[in-house]
Image (cartoon, rainbow, N blue to C red; front, side, top):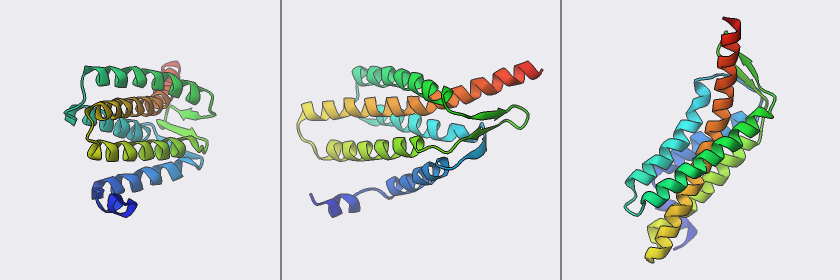
Length: 169
């Protein structure tokens, strides 16, 4: 199958999602202030995509779910580590977080999209059951760790916000 055929065969919603994720990634490269609720969007999208795939894939089994959960946990730990070392500022009154510009979100978005696109292609075209099972497990691992990293970063901002609100009360 040619690259053009692959691109033409890709559903429109994939390109819309890519455009939205790239938009968010480019925005994250610049320092900005955002409401805490808005910072939950990307973690929810990545977690939702991972869970949706696990629920809809006839090949996904308990092992794949376990891999996703373990990698989600590892990603959360990594996300907390990354966020706690960044220079973010929380305003508990306005419920906003000022974030320094970072390439990390764009790098995660790009790496995840490329991996998921490749895995989607492999899952759609592979005929060997063992290969399909391996791709399903890799997909679960990628989805879990990326969702976890974004969730861990969000959790750090949320925890800091609530700690400051409690100390002001």
